[in-house]
Length: 331
Image (cartoon, rainbow, N blue to C red):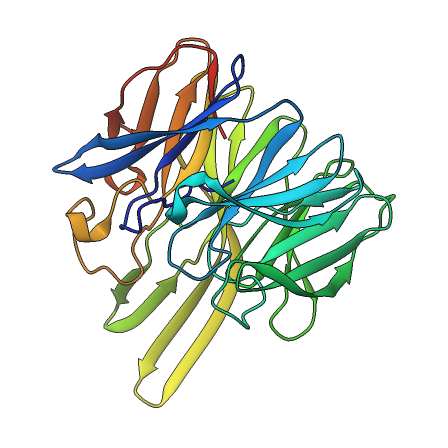
């Protein structure tokens, strides 16, 4: 899941849970002058056994991310309104069966029709994908988005910018549904069992080149991020569109899928995608449009260490955060 923005600023924050006590706490982050710091924290109380965070998003259109919980025993689905004090305001939504899995949300509305974060669910028995349409923090309707073959090994990775991304754990095939004008399948690449999906985001800059006086623009939108469990390689996958303009009256457009290595990770580190650094904070030089917008929070469960990887400034641009004891996990 993508890290939530809890206090309506330009930075993602961290949500923690103590696996022994059930306590939930958040850290508010800020990054300035090539460093990340904790500017506030708050305990949100104790959560009983059986409750799991399955998504973050803005479900009441107040500009602050909320937390979606599912009880694995009862199937009850609730969300926390963090703007109203976290656990102090709990909204009940529905009950679901264990075959329904939340599709993690990583950015702009996945169906393009409202300003609210989408609540998308994948039924592992039937292959059905549905959206719970939200209004004033409650479900206003349920719509089927599409269906995947339930017996073919497909896993829904997440949604972002109108796309729902998939990976087949049997064949290694990956791709995405584009959902703006009906469901359209776009195959991307193969990722075998040695690759671990980390999340969705934009990790490669757009670019403009002039070759023999001809302008060539390279548009590199958000895509998937993966880690190789053997080598530690971290690579971004995205659809690159090249626009070549030899004259004012001629434009040639070509799109192909690209894979780019952005660095390497050590063993024992888990990744969370978010906007932990900001273009407007001076972390990324140059024009904001088309620049890298996402960074990676790495947490080592054994040592309690946490690092923010400022991807835009290269493989070695790490910001160290406070450590925690091993019973605390990012949720």
